[in-house]
Length: 247
Length: 179
Ligand SMILES: [Fe+2]
Image 1 (cartoon, each protein chain N blue to C red):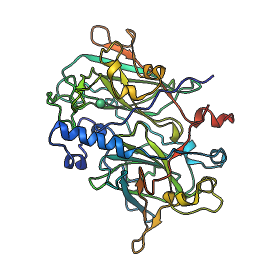
Image 2 (image 1 turned 60 degrees about the horizontal axis):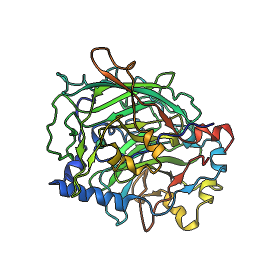
Image 3 (image 1 turned 90 degrees about the vertical axis):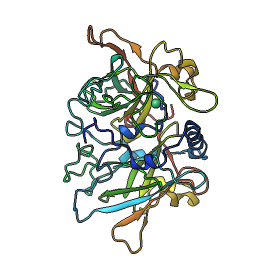
Image 4 (image 1 turned 30 degrees about the vertical axis):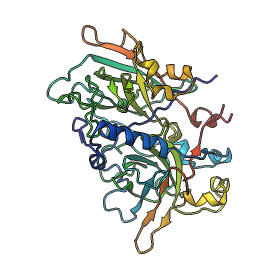
């Protein structure tokens, strides 16, 4: 399937809420009833030491998985999407700063009006026929990734307190070990909605929250065409430590 | 010195245009005689189905190899890549078609769903290996949550349910290095 064809998951059609109150009920239920009550079980050191521990390895991806235009969300349709063109790029490393090479990076986002091309999104902002808002790329030998897209709009979360999301990009990343998997969100510097963004503030430590904010980097944009934002990503997980025998 | 990691953020409700892909759960090559079905339900703390979950499986090949192969996102119908990504349906049900792993008899599983700040790791054991260090470390009354059951009356079918919260809560694993 080409990335340009949105493939709404049929189940999500079925649970489409009828209004924004329904949507916020669904969200509140998910938050209350999905997180485990018991702490995750700490994996004993003898487990990773065992030969053939699957979690210390992970899936591999290549040009069979990612097409040459999949990183450019502005070129997936006949016309160009509305919005401010941007380049978002950076390096993916482990905690020792070693590049994560040849790994899959996936991106999804709202359009410039703050609307997702997704059947669950009931925000009454226009869809853009030229924007799906999904992309993929592979990291290079130096761990670098790069996307071309448009800056997403802010959108309301629904519910009675009129909370809004700061503009953000959703990212999905893979490391060299299955346990390095990361799903997260990137924000834009200077966004006045940042201090009140409920999702970003779910990260407890202020210093950690700040690591979710990209930096304007004029060297990454295309002169006369787009501004660039730099966001480096550090994957956690045992590949950074256990394989060095220093846990 | 270690760099501070980038924090996780919830997957949210709108990943459906980006992450699921056709054939995501068809890890076994088409028509493979040793293909097995692994399926089950994902349920929340009230036992209600989770209709918007996303499950990712990583496993050894039948020869025990953990090298994997590219091509999961655009499967060619022949290559076993070791990795699969399966959304749950409106009943919270998922279906994986795969080959049994050689070596240690488990699949690594990563569960994503809106409402979680971070994905959850667990293991799906398709057999109970004697002396397995992880199973041995679990309290006896929770060990069974990681064991897939062979389905009576169905050839090559295994059942594995995921309970995110509450009674019968699945054991989730903390792999952090803890520094
Ligand atoms: Fe979002």
